[in-house]
Length: 215
Image (tube, rainbow, N blue to C red; front, side, top):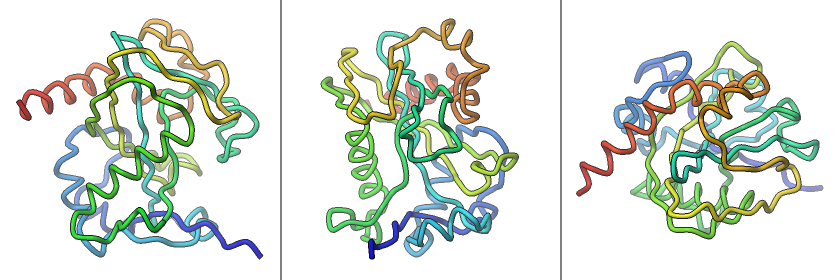
C-alpha cells in the first residue's frame, strides 16, 4: 500500500494569534516570525488536512516576473488540485512534503522552507534565468472550500530573462503577460491569483523595499 502524502500545516489558532485576515496582507515579516516558530509547523496526512479547517496547509505561491510581465497559465485536467482545474493562475508551487533534504524542524525553519520552495517550483517549470526571491504577501480565503484549509505564502521571483519552460502536463497556455492582459482574463482566474492581480503594485513595492533594505 502506498504511503499517504504528508503535508506541512499549522494550526489555525497559530494564525489567529498573529492575526486572522481575509484576502491578502503584505505585513509578511510579522506573520513569518509567528508561523515559523519551532513546533508550530508540522506534517500531517493530507486526507485529514483537506477536511479539517482547524489546520492550514502552508502553500508557497510563487509569481514569476520579468520586465513588467508576469507568468500566467491555465491548470489542465492533470492538475493535482482538481477543484482548480480550468482556472487561470499566476502562482506556482504546491504542498510542502517531508524529505531527507528538508529538515523543516531544524534551527532555521525559514531557510529550510525556502529550499523547499525552490524544489516545488522546479517540479512544475524550469527557470533558466537568474532571479531574486522575496516573500511579499500572505493569502487567506475562508470563503471557499479550498481556501479554508490553505494559507498561501506569496513569493515574487524577479527574473533577468523570460526563460521558463513547463515540466508538468497540467500547465497549459503558459505565457508572460502584462497586467492589462491579465486584468482582461481576471474572470477566469482562481481566487488567489485574482487577489494577487488586484495588488500587484503593492507586491512589487514590497519586493523593492526588501531589496533596498538588503543593499
